[in-house]
Image (cartoon, rainbow, N blue to C red):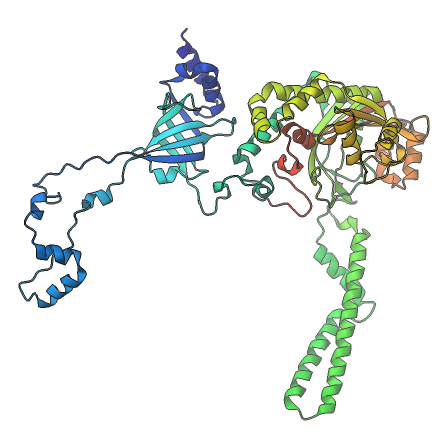
Length: 623
């Protein structure tokens, strides 16, 4: 079988749901020295115009028939008089002859010597060169369209969507393109409103692009991030499937604060305006109605205006002004009290949940590990992959209100088992990206972070530095060349600054810190024998900090009950979880990988909102 036939076979089922060829498939063959085999093939491609240029062709001379009344007859100009030329060229002379010419004067139209009238109607032929991208890869395909095939003005704007059919040819000039498409059919044109299309401008900063997240994936950077995100997502399911984990979907709405100290999004269907009106009604029964006072103030204001106009009784006017002032003061006082009462009531959760959609207060879930534990205690090894929510009012580059997490829980597993699994999982993810995203990583190394590939290779080849919390504190205390914002003392929750210093400066590789103080970890983490620390750990990587947090969970009913009392948590909300300890308890452990932070680590970007398709952060939820 010839090389050309092999390429034809590889391109010919195109796509199961479309006849078009993905540019990734096409350009992969061309870049692998397969351009010769592709030349001559007809393909259908679709995508969006990334850049364009139009090249005008030389004009062809017009050939006219002198017998045609519409043609240009040079003999008509041979007997043109000087007077007619003056009339044609100089408006003042033409006006004088029009006045003095008499009945025999017939003014001629302005002589056209520069261009034949038909040339103004027939556009100059041209060739349009388009760089087309369809999101399947970093590279673009050059598409050549003659002006006889489609109107150039419709094709040229950045962002125009086209579906074209044509023949693959070698480029006419040497350059970075090994193959191009000469289109002879344009089957679809999705035009662009140039004035309002935000991507018409070059080099839009990523922070500005966040306001137009529906257009962001058309940029090369965001498209690259999304392809890497897709590989990491698929690799996540592959890893757990290969290790006999069962995928369990945990609820997005829960009545339990899984961490015990989180900032939660409350879920309600109650109309707060109606609740405010209800509280106002209750307040009115206790004293004077605010609305009555406001109405009285309006009436007294009108009375004052009438007295001012009449000027008949100054004493009555003075008394009315005094009365109006007192009424307004009372209204302001009542309004402030009512507002304070309503705010306090709503803040203290005094809204009656029995009238809500759910009969108790519910929240968007912060973590699914408690729910996974119930399935681990029946199925063995389980995992979940989905969005988690935290209502932190922060502009941190490492936080968004909605972030995706990978959570795993293993029955009959202790702390060391969880640490080993977490480490293997991280290595697996990095290896899959290196194997499947080489072109995207080269683009990132060139345009965003030249160390991205080295970081991934380091994760695959190097084991993390293992440190207990006590050891980490000792190392940080000895640091002399840096002043930390938070003082180093036993019992503090190590900050991003502390952890990053250990990974980026001290060890220059991943670091795993374990056995944290019990005060800085959730109530369900297993208490160590020293009574001060718990079986929890963080896996910290250079550049982004903590990427995985894990723990062994407390299986002893008496100890977890005392931890709930210590933290002042509402025990009734955790009774279902305590039931797992009363009935068939088992040692189990697990971890949470911050998936969006993993994408951030892989791509070398600095803000997590640039790797989330539709980021939600404090004050920002545009679509």
